[in-house]
Image (cartoon, rainbow, N blue to C red; front, side, top):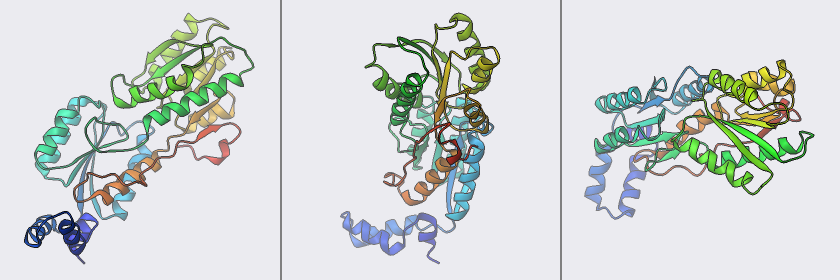
Length: 325
């Protein structure tokens, strides 16, 4: 077996051809090929935002399975939503001399110095499902995610049986990072043209369903019947406990929508507590991410065109077509 190909996805011959085509002399190209021809599998240091949340469990399984199928030595660690810990993990990957560092960022801005430290050490850095400005990214298009959320909100309001003007609230994730900012841009690009829709509250949940519940309880206390028409969760099933609470307390006047189809979310949709969600499938995210990493070797700069995460919409009418996690 050509160890160059097994480690980096292209044969030594292919690398030489590409290098010469790029303008390198044959001797220089041969030296470059020799430098990259390391034995053994590709080693990926991967720090994921938090391995304990529902979304991360099937994603981690998909990462491990895809690593095994692509001859990748995967070093997967848990950042526990701690930006300082995640930066330390990146530093440890640098010491371990992994071939590439992948990060599902706990904080997309705070990780930038560690990302620069990795690239300064000659180790490529790739962001996964959370954009880090200035670095390659594999994952959902968060602005498109927001657009689809906005479209779902409009659909849910139109089918709610009430007429505008509408007052809605958001259960957001972590402010400041690219996912939060881009999803907000996408949502507002859809609903800002509707003068009959007003965003009356935005609650920061840090992707915690418990904080989503307490935030929803505060909203229902502040806005009485007829004063709040819809609550939308931005991910992490942050809206589900609140939807259940609203149902139990007789607040069926409030419609709930969200993102990600967990078992609990599917139950809420099936029972009519929640209208629907935009589906971000964690298994697909994990599989697409690591498959793309294998194709990006050896320089890890160009993301493959087929590294696309679909974002379908799920409501009660098509719920049985999806597999919750």
